[in-house]
Image (cartoon, rainbow, N blue to C red):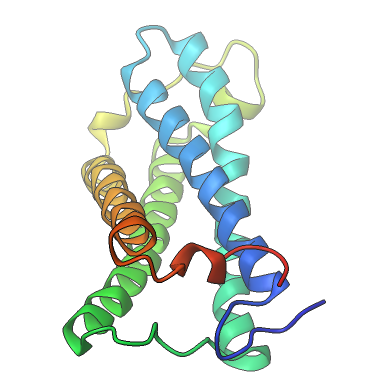
Length: 177
């Protein structure tokens, strides 16, 4: 297991990053699909996929925070990066954590308040509630759009660094080397 160095991220940090990215994309796709599902059976089926993935993201995000706090050091900022860009980068990462934990809290709130768990995971004849009747639905939906915006901004910044600045930023967040 390679730890992070001043010039690149270590194996654990890279693994958490890319696994989280894949799972978050799966969550967004399944979340928007569930929100637009016309029948309860389809919605329940999508939620049977969506909810366990959300729980994995909760654990991965908590593990990531503990990893940075107790076990590993972050690499230095990219050489020549203006201070304002470094502040924006840090702010986007903090926003990711806030939105992720907010999405998990609002999603759990919807399931708990609506009693939907039995319809999603248990009783075959249980009725799936209308989630729009529950207060956590609005922040959960807004969080989905915020997460998309953060991902687009984050990926756009990485591509800008890679192809415009040509500072090989993506290499820092990949395996090996």
